[in-house]
Image (cartoon, rainbow, N blue to C red; front, side, top):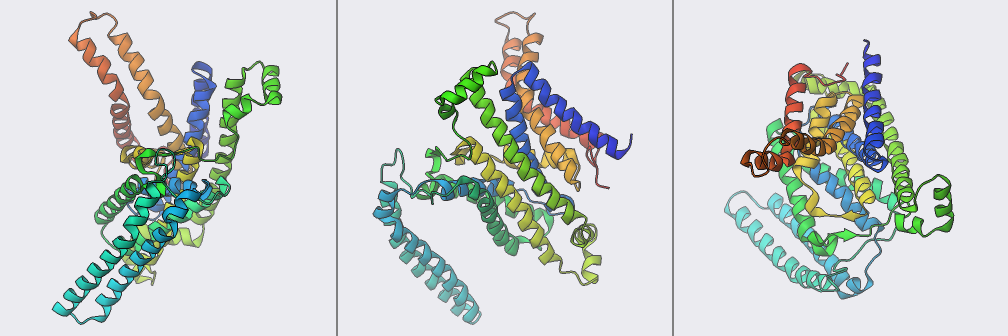
Length: 434
């Protein structure tokens, strides 16, 4: 079979799996897998841009996805007037003082002569700046978080349409990637991996603890959506009438309507990003990036600024992950900082890229759909399999109880085995780079 025929066959298999889910389980489940598969494919596309094309080992994907989610809160949620009156201006003054303190430390380090004078001077500037900043910031934060903490306790957002938050999420992630890249790019790949992982954990820690910005572990719910809420559709007589005409109850029809709408929006975004990624891959810039990936020394000898090109692609890939994070939070209508876990938002995305085919954009998209389908379906299938296996056993059997309890871990076991099999028999992925 030709490579083109193989690609068509693999994507057709994914379509069959999703349709089969709708027929066997429910169309709600099938559309959920489709929508999350689209978002996962976008994340995999961003990681493939960094690793598959440029060879950059980024294991901080989780942090960039979380920044995209934060963007939906800061852009689309309505502002909380009482919180702004209580301490909003003072809070931003404190943040400005903190930024000025950092700048003062940098300037002191640059201006003072080497030796003890520099050490003592920088320490004095840092201590003074820290105390001034905390003296202004802490009372303002406490005042904001004390405003009806059960429901608000934060400043809110700008009240803009939520679709604006998607590119803003990409900008947030790109800005963080630029800071990380200026600091860590140029390091050996393993050091870059450690740096990105550590900074992503710092981002999550900030989201969990800075209640004035993201409500922390209390979560932000009711984030505006580009589509109506299901309950609003169920209260619309015309929608109920149309649903009845199709033989559907209003609850099922409203859920399907919203999920199909999200699927269309996500597919449009994925299509645009895929076209842009393909154009970049096949351009002179893309060929240069692959040349740098394959032999940095030769690329430097040809006069290429390797660090600057790495920074470009690192920022672009992270921005794509930020867009995907904003899309996912929009679909969920809530920001839950505690749900951002490396297993889901870093390891699983890497599995998607590896399984699909590193360096191939279509392969990354295929991996996004296929691996997400397995991630969702393995646990219920594993539980059903264990029930069948343990059926002949006695009810009080310790082995039966152990197997049934272990069914919840079938997802992790299956993903690990699946990855090992792929690396053994198809190390370049299902659709390898040409």
